[in-house]
Amino acid sequence: MENTVAQKIEALSKVQQIDSELDAIRKLRGDLPEEVQDLEDEIVGFETRIENLKKDLGEVEANIDQYRGKIQDFKKRITYLEEQQMNVRNNREFDAITKEMEMLDLDIQVAQKKIRDNEAEETIKRERVTDTNERLEERRKDLTTKKAELDEIMAESEVDEQKLLKQREKATKHLDERLLRSYTKIRDNSSNGLAVVSVKRGACGGCFNTVPPQRQADIREKKKLIVCEHCGRVLTDVEIIEEAEPTPKRRSTRGRKATTKKK
Image (cartoon, rainbow, N blue to C red; front, top):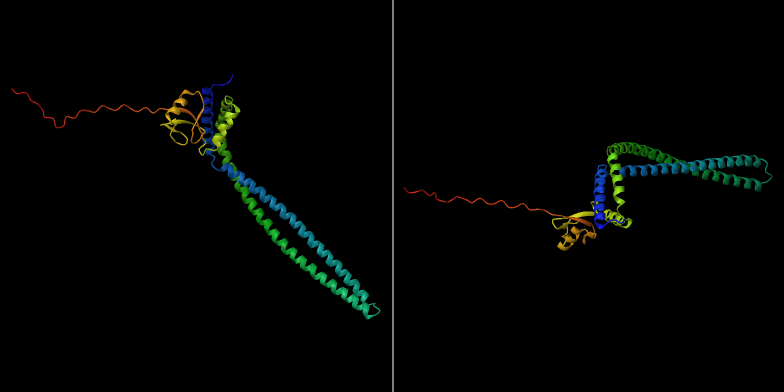
């Protein structure tokens, strides 16, 4: 059986009331959930950075080993050529061997420079690993502290929050999906989380713009959903402020002359 407009309005008001109570509970947590999430993301970033630095370090160390191996090969070749130089038959062979040895000596110098460059890079990366590890440990300590604070706050409000969530689930069953989506959209766009409000003193309880008398009458009838033409919030009721009756003024006797009876 489809709910009447009045029932939908009542359900909307109930959902809004529950959501406002949930907002109040979550407000107690402040920025802690976001801070915890930010710290967790930062820690993942540091861990990824350390992993990449260690990978780079491995490549640098491999380069150093490679150049050292080349230097050993060059030196072995020079030793061999020195032996060959002792057995040359003419100056031409001697000059050719000498030239090759000079080239090998230059290759050794280039390899040594490459080693120095890689060792300098290795030092920088190791310092970065150390620095990043220190910052990582600091963030982990911060995360532990923040999580403890958040867990304590959540433990205090968890029972009430779960109770409200069950009530909300029950209340939303009286709303069709399209109406619930519209409610959620209005609420998300509202700075105070209010999507359903009453008319107070002739004005919308959300944006405080005046609601015409005819629309107020339509709201009271509850025959159709009425929204504020300025902010789009659902208007569910009109609060009537009764004015107190004026207190009768006492007649003043100041300035009156007392009358006496003549004898």
